[in-house]
Length: 402
Image (cartoon, rainbow, N blue to C red; front, side):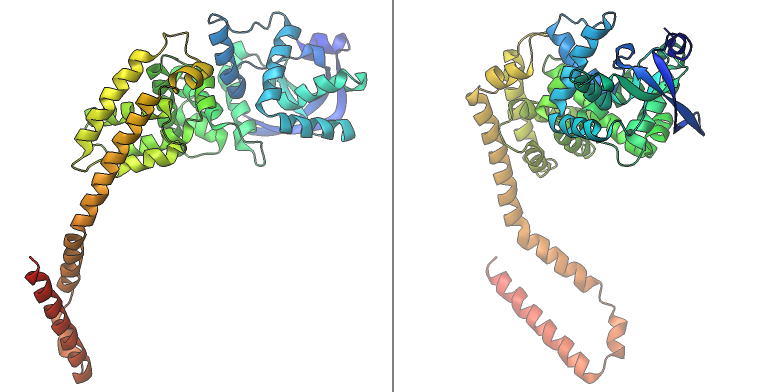
């Protein structure tokens, strides 16, 4: 059904006096707002946040995504996820709508697909159960379809969700899922198009792409390909951002791959509480004389972890917490490996500290321009000479200890 034609004719859609400004294809204009019956609407499975949840649903239902053919059953499934993802925000929005009605119009397509307003739609569905006056959603209706305007619709959604001020932040994994799906996997958008839609620079988008690809690589490593909800549950984004920066310091691709596998293993097993801080400590090892020994140990432990993983389709957040991470022998071995390497690095730094200070002192002395001495007065020259005498005394004492 086209809500702009049939919906109006059947009184499922009612005009209002309101409007909302939208920018589509670079043109900003005010679009009329309508009141649409709730049972004519459905959640957008292309939404980044919802796509993360659908990955969980598919893993639990033999790879099958929820079907929107039965609109009410489909909406009930997605609604429950949206509530669970942020119950406090739902409660706050619902209370606000109950007191003052819906204040901000949403955006939908002419078939009823919601582009902006999932949380408001959810709250109205819940309120309608108590009071039928909440049975309508105020929204702009765009005469577009996913089949014919996928890129345009996605750019509009990104602009609304990420490009406008004062929007509710997405879970960082949801944003990575969107970047992966829209740029890397499907090629729906270019880096420049995505950046323009989200009010970011191309460099910021490329950085997020690097992290998104690492997230996909990590899920493949743990036998959970594209099960993005696991990445969300394990809170992998900030550790992976640290890993992306760490890999740029590597001298070869093999070295970067070894470090990636080591970090993936530690993220999965989580031998330490703060994984971001844990990974940062690896930075001190990279480039040191102890790097090869450390990575060799980590590779051996990684092989044991991989061998113990359930097969594809059997890995879940629960199995990671209850089965994989309970292997204390491996988690303790990972901890010991890192502690041993960082301790050696610190000891080496302590031993080399005198050399570093002597090199710095020599560098400072080399910077002295002898011509400046000709411009000093007698008092300044005597002060300079006293400092040289002190330097000679310190050097002589150090030489006695060699």
